[in-house]
Each structure stands twice: as C-alpha cells, then as structure tokens.
Length: 524
Image 1: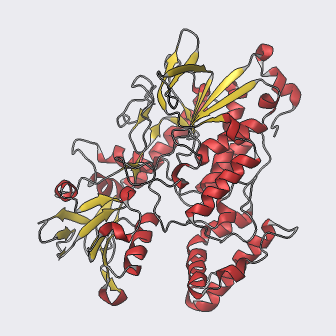
Image 2: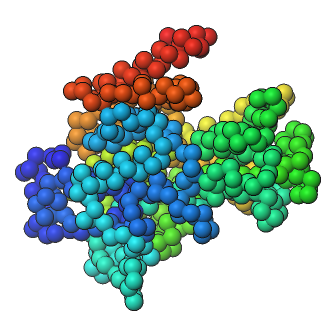
C-alpha cells in the first residue's frame, strides 16, 4: 500500500541503494510489521529487504501455547483465555476474523487467525524461526545496526548488519511481583506464584482457598476459573470495598499489606483486616518490559531522570521506554544513534492492539523513508507536556474506597509495590502510566499516526462505540454461551456482502439484549 506519490517516494531513496530491515519477533507486532513492509512500494521495488527473527517454532507470540517450563515460561497463555475485546474491534483492519467466529474467541482461534494472516500475506518466507536475537548494537563505523542471532542447530552465532531495527518482541513474559512484606517467603515455600505459571485450576492441587491478586483481565479470569472449579476465592483489589459474594465463596478485599504466617495461611490487608486458612496465592500483577538483546550503551536499565530536560539517552524502567517520540521512536542525542533508524512497536496498553500496530507501522515506514519528517523539537515538547500532565495526575489525592477517612495518590499506591524505597514514587508512577492510554486516547493516537504517515485512514465511530461497550458485550456473550445460544447468534455473521456491517449489527443487537435484561443500567 502506497502512502505517498511515487515521485515523492523515489526522491526519498538516494541512489536507490537497498536498505535492510530487521524485525525482532513474529508475534502480533512482528506480523503487523512484516505485512505493512511487504505492502510498501519500497519493498516491492527492491529498495527495502526485511528479515524477522523469531525465538520460537511458530508465529503467534503469547497466543502460541507452551508448557510451564522455564522461569518464566515462554507465554502466560492459560487454558480458559479468550479475547477481552470483540474480534471485530480487535482484528487487523486488513484481515477480519472468519465468518461465524465466536465474538470473544478462545486462544486457539486467535492463533489460527494469526497463522491465516501470515499465510494470506505470504509472510512466512520472511521469518527465521528458532533463531533468537542475542544482541543488538550500533556499529558507528559503518552507520548500521549489528544483530547477533543463534540459528537452530548451528555451531556458532551469526552477526548481520541492518539499516533499520523494529523491536516487536512483546512485553508479556517477565513477571512483575510486588514487594509486599512476606511475599518472598510465600513464593519460596511455593505457596504463592505469578499468573505467568498458571494454566488451569488443577495447578492448585487440593487447595480449597486461593487468593487472587489483581483486577485486570487475567485476575478476573482466574477468579472465574477457580470459582467454577468449586474453590473459594479471596480477590485482592487495590481500593476495593469489602464484599462477600457467591454465598461467601468469593471475598473481595483491598490491597494486601503483609503476607503472614505460612502455616496458618494468614494474609493482612490494608486497614488491618485479616484472612487465614489460605492454601495458595496467585498474583496477576502484570509484566516487565524487557529487551535483553540491547547493550547497556543502547538502553539504560533504570528509571529515567526527571524532566525537563529530556535525558538524551534511552531508558527502560521496566514500566516504560523513555523518551520515545510518538511512543515509537527513541528521541536521543545524535551521538547515541539516529532516532529514525529504530522503532518500538506495541508498547501502549489498554488499547485495541492490532489496529494500533498497523497505525504505528505506517508511521514507522514514513519515518524510515523520510527521516526529516520526525521533528525532534516538537516531539520533545509533546513528551514534556505528557510528563507534566501525568505528574499532576499521579500526585493528586483521592479517597480510598476501602477506608472511610483516608486519601492517597497514584504515586503512593505504585510506590507500595516498588522494590526499593529509594525510588522516587512520583517518577515511578509516571513511568507506570506512561504507555497507558485512557479514554479515547488510543483512537486519537491512531488517527494522529495515520495523518502523520499521509494515510487517510481514520477510526470508525462503531469501533469506538463497541470498545466502550466491551465489558457489557462480553458479559452478554458469556451468558449466551452458558445458555448454549452463542453459535446461533453468530450463524451467518460476516458471510454476506455487508461483511463488517453485519458484525456491527450483531453487537448492537447484543447491547439491546443487555438493556432488556438489565433496564436499570440502560446505555440509552
């Protein structure tokens, strides 16, 4: 797909010298990168070449199953995982899910979708499987990136040079554990584990009472799995109001302040309340951003310093990569490396990831072809404006739902999980919130990226509507599945000439069903 007139494209290719692109990873981000590159005029004219290196034996990233061997395992994928977005909202815009697909498909369906995407756009020949990237460094003498990989069954590593690097290795593997007092002892006694090791309730053996920490999609799914298996669950949610549900089998509690006596299974919550008789604890507390192939001279492994000014070097706090123009391009001093030669994909969270990846890649190729289009001054202004907005937000105090007379700030809450008391809680909270998109920010971001890339694509109104309603839609879909009616609802959907319009009509019909079942929370 061309985004600029041919004359403009040709003017951006000095001497038409072939330029090579390295893509690290062949999960959802890497596949998006390969597809958009393959569509480009530069690739089709032989101006760009591309190679993707994938550690595993197949595409799919986190959607590709793996046993719980290794520390950590290759994927956090658990048996009951389904998408938490309806697939018309989640899908690559260039490739819808097949007709009659379950609205919230299971992981196996998503993996098949990824495989079909790669086959349809002929991406497999561009990928080297079982070939992990060991190191990425900048060779200043030749002005290129040196990438060392380990091919399968090879007697030695290989080093290749590339003009451009696209980082697409994902960020859902390295578990993040809070620094709650007593937790290390529970983990050491195998009484607590991170959800990256979870596959199904049988992992807990004969445990009858399980604490689940975390209120994200994984935490919610684990609670459902465990309740369905007949176990009792104590769900620890920061700021939650104390509740006992499901005839007492589900206890909702606040943040855990301390893990107590292991033999008694005692946990103490903020506010002083306690629960005992806990058999196991599973922590769905998120993941660290990790790029083990970068040398320390490329990516500093620490929290960045306060701004302004911008630091001039690139940092990985494990919560964010900073500073990145447009959440993609390193905004660093010229002596570090050219900002227009490397891109980080898929760092934003709380988004519909696949369409966002497509928008990011169109912006990436625009910068690769036109490095002068990246205005460092304006990008620095934008980064500092976001920093100051987040700083104001994370230091604002608000009431704590689980107590009647106290207030707290986001910075104070994040600091409670920090591994070291010396870390500035405000800087840590800013880093934690940096790539988190709230409200309609993701849609504005996608539109801005497409405008920057010279593409006329804009987010359709129905997608925003259905993203807003994703929780209601998922609840209704699960009810249809319980009643055995789900297949009937999607029968024929997407088969007609109207394609996506049929899926939108189905989702609106499902929302109407929700309004009829729950008139007290009508969206009208």
